[in-house]
Amino acid sequence: MKRLTIAASIASVAVIAAVTAIIADGLNDRTGPADVAVVLGSKVMPDGTPSPRLKARLDRGVELYRDNRVAFVLVSGGTGKEGFSEGLVMRDYTVAQGVPRDRVIMDEFGNTTRATAENAARMMQARGLTTAIAVSQYFHITRTRMALNDAGIGQAGSAHARIYELRDLYSIAREIPGVITYWLGSR
Image (cartoon, rainbow, N blue to C red; front, side, top):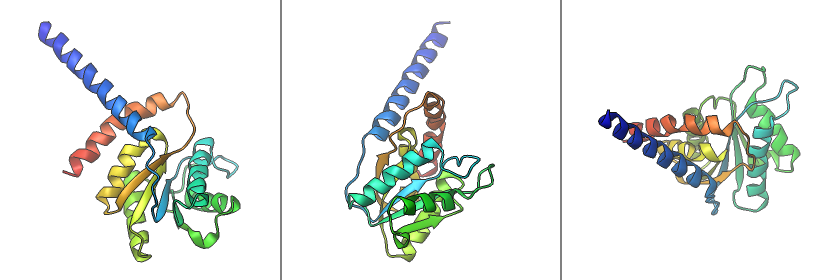
């Protein structure tokens, strides 16, 4: 029984440490100059507009462009169950916010974090771009930066979307095995 208590205590401390690290990393923006803001997709509403989470991500990417932190905004997302291309919705929203269309790079096949990173790396390389700032929810930043680095994108900075929801608790818990899997896969 004593071993079980010790094991449970160690596991609890490990989970608390992981959660703390993921949150701290995600909230610590690194917005030094970069070539591209890579904005990861999220749900599109049934009426074809960005969900609040997606809008917050896009607004952060637009902000980085307006502040001259990046020269391009790369939007990446697949087609969700609502039937809309996240990439297309994201591009149109970004352009409507004042980013010139020729400064928006669209990826319609970023169905996962890894796919977004690989697609972004390919699209950036084709344009001679090498550095990026990952834009997503704070709890998703660590894994996104890992994926971008694994795909060969240098200086993967980060900027978290400014939206916080109760469901973030679930998302944070889900990120722990995701980060571990990425970490193990890149070793």
